[in-house]
Structures are given as C-alpha cells and as structure tokens.
Length: 634
Image (tube, rainbow, N blue to C red; front, side, top):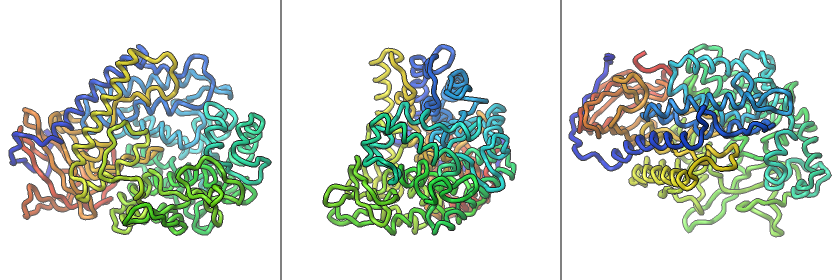
C-alpha cells in the first residue's frame, strides 16, 4: 500500500446511505451491463463498428462513429467497471481498421496512420475526445502515450505542413495526417449535408454572390457554384476553430511534461491574440497563409469557414475558450481568460434587452457579422424587422439569447470570479431556461443546459439536483436499452450516427457530482475539474467499489466534498486536487469541525470503513502545480 503524508479517516456512521449515494453506485453498475449488451448487438464480432459499409467513399463520419463510445473511458476513470475500458479499446481499434480501409476521393483512406486524413477541427475535436479520455483512464498504456505524441507531432513537428512555425498559423481550415491540402468542399459539403442543411437554414455567408437568397442554393447548379467559391475563399489559411489543436498538444504535455508542447500552445494562442488586437479587438475568422487577415476574402475579416458570417459565435467561440482553458492549465496564469472574455463582451456590448419575464430582461446578443443584404432565412427565435427580415445593425445580426453554448459557463468555471458569474446571470435566457429543472429525456450530444441547473444547486437554489440528475441519467439509460430491445439487433440501415444515437452511457451528472466538473467543451475541450479520485488498492483511477462522492460547493475559496462508503467492505481512496493534480489543498476541515489541517499537497488519502461517511471542506490554491496524467502515487 502506498503511503501519503496527509490522511483522513471517516468516523461518521452512514448505516443508511443517502439516496444520491445509492443511485450513483447503481448507475456505475448499470453502465457496465448496458455496454455489454450494446456491444453485443451493435458491434461486429471482430470489434469493428458496422459503418462505413465496404463500398463507402467519403471523408466525413469517422468522428461520429467514435462519438458512440468516446465517454466510456471517462466513466471508467471516474470509477466505472473495467469492462467499459476494455470495450472502448476494442471498438476504437476496430474503428481505426474500418477507417483505414475506407476510401476517399483523393486516392488514400479516410484514416491514415490512425488519424483522420484532412478534416476541420470541429469534427476532429469531437473525435479526439476519446484520445483525451484515454489519458485520464490509462496513461500507463504505451499505445495511448505513443499516439498522444504522434498526434501532437502532426502540428508541433511540422512534417505534414499543417503548421507554419514562423507565422504561427495552421495552414488550412482542414488538416490532419495528410496535411492541409486535401480540403475539397464539394467532397465534404455535398454529402451527406448539402445546401439544404448548411446554407438554406443558416443563411448566405457572403453578399457579393449572384444569389438573391439562401434558398437559391437548393438548386444543384447554384450549390456547385457555392462549392467553387468555398474552395477559393475558405480552403487555405487559419481560422479560430483551429485553436482546438491546443487540446491535442496539451494532451501530449500531460503525458510527457515536455515543455515544447506547452510553448506551442501559448505561442499559438498569443498569435491569435495579436491578430485580434490588429483587427480592433474582434477575432478575425480567416487569416491567409501569408499571415494577412482576409487574404482570400478581399480583405474582409469575416466570411471564413465556420466564421462570423455562417455559424457565428457558436463556432467562433469554441477555439478561444478551449485554448484559453488549456493555457491556464499549463501555465497557471488566468490572464489567458481575457481573450475569450473580450470576445463575449463585444457581443454583450451590442446586445438588446428584451422583456420576456415579469422581473428580468433577456439580453439578445448578435451571433453573426456580415455585409448588408438579404438575410431572410430560417431563423426562429431571432429578432426581426417589421417586415420579418432578420434584424441587421452595423454589421451584426442574428440577435437572440445566448444559445446553450457553454462558453460563458466555462469562463466562470475557470476563473471562479464574481465578474464572470455576473456574465452568466446577464446572459441567462429568462424566457425559456428553467434553472431548477432537469430534463429526463436523453440530451443531445453537446450536453449543454444541465450546467445551469448544476450551478443553481451549487448556489443553494436547487438542493434536489443530485437526485434529479442521477434519476434522469437512469431514465436515459433505460430509454436507450428500450431501443435495443425493440430493434432486437443492429438496424438494417446503419449510418455514421448509429452508435452515438444509441450509446447508453451518460457521464455529465457523474462529472458534476463526483469531480465538481462541467461537461468539457464538446468540440474538443479537456476535462477541467476540482477534484479527481483514485483507488490505491487496485492501483487505478476512479472511486473504489461501493464509494460515492458528491461535490457540494465550488467557489474561489475551495470546495466541499462528501464521501460515502455504501458497500460492505472497508475502502481507501486518494482525492486529488484537480483532474491533473494542478491544484493544491491548502487547508482541510472535516465533518463541520472548525479545526483545520494544512496538507500543502495535491493529494490526500482517505480511509473509509464500511458504513461510514466524511465531509471535507477544503481550501484550494488553483493551478499551482504542473499538470500531469500521472497517478498521484507516482
């Protein structure tokens, strides 16, 4: 058994564990059994997913397959059964084989050297969540380590041409193992999405084309013309979404501690901060390979792929948020948050208050920027002119309440400042969002929304939240298992989403309750947490069998954490400050006592005899330590 300098022994009886503790442990058990059944029904005997079919030719969809099981290693790392990790490894290896055998229009496969050949970092960010979760689950796995370094090397080592070291820019909005020059919008956009999905619903990104309105793109000839323009204006150069690459590089640092990875992250982030300053404080959505803003858009700072004139802040906000989180983790300097905060404040300053609640106004902020023109398209919930046209004001348009994007929530979570908490309040959609309700239906893949109910719990407004979110997770598993029973096997027509749509594992409630952590930014963020638990007896991450955890307070001072041994055996566990040991315990009080002890350590050892519980009130110095995937006893 490992020895730790600071130890706590639980002494409070818990012969009748609280309901949340029993439900939490039952959920861990349910996930393992559900995944057994899921794999038996929906994965081939060789461990390979059933998509893509043998005759498929294309560049899209690999990330969707991985999203069907990406969170299994994460639930294992929180205390789930070994089967979750075993199944995840098997299906991922099968997916890699399948992807490496699937052709693209370019003469090479969809997956080359175990990494997608050339995709945007919206989708690469989603697919690589599995890679990051494996760092939490199995950092000692040599294959996991080797892939982490090799994948980061696609950008840091510059052998693929993905990254220009001198100009500090990613050389294309799509990149990967084959470099940035296999960006063909007709190959990607036409199938399975096409103009109906991409443009007629979102509006035109440019006003200088021959089209009168977005609906014109439903004509196949017009659609092909759009692909030509996309290739001319959007196939080269850097976009804010590429800041998601910082997670891939941070992942390598967490495995190795190699300073060149940290320097790459901070240098690339600083390059984008400089471009933003050059552009008057608004992040440009396209930068040419020369480093010039608007090089391919006639000098316009808007109009790039996934930029201000298409997806708007929903996409533009991803990269600055993710990169700032990673830079704070790697350096301990929360000044990096000034970057995403400044972009959010640009939108707040342009906002329009609308009375939708007897007491509070909802702030409608612009989500897009573009030149004057016809913006009449499907934009429900967006402010409009008297004639029904989408409101356009000084270039800004699509005024609506902040979507369920978690960026403002993550900004507060990383700073824990009252200033950022005020931003969360100011951007609350008072007309629609109930912060004291948990939706029992299976949420969408992004996991947005429940963070606000969790915040209400942390602030004392929603004390029932732990029971409600765990009950909702249980109902969501039951819904997925009912689909499995009704189908009686794999569906006749599988698509790239078939695993994701049926995945019976839901991790968000467990993240919040056991680690005091929000859902990571879904498009490629890393887990950021207050605490993490380890089982020293089994020498693995996660809560020991029978042990439940509940983080009851998160603020700038520290946390409150309750641990309960619901099982019939004595247990021991290690509580680490931060997901990567990046925080430091500076003072600890137990079971409501005023006397405090000062561990001055990133980990504490807790003995939990059977039928006991302990409440820990801990002060934290956040981002005080060098982060690492290493287990605390290492």
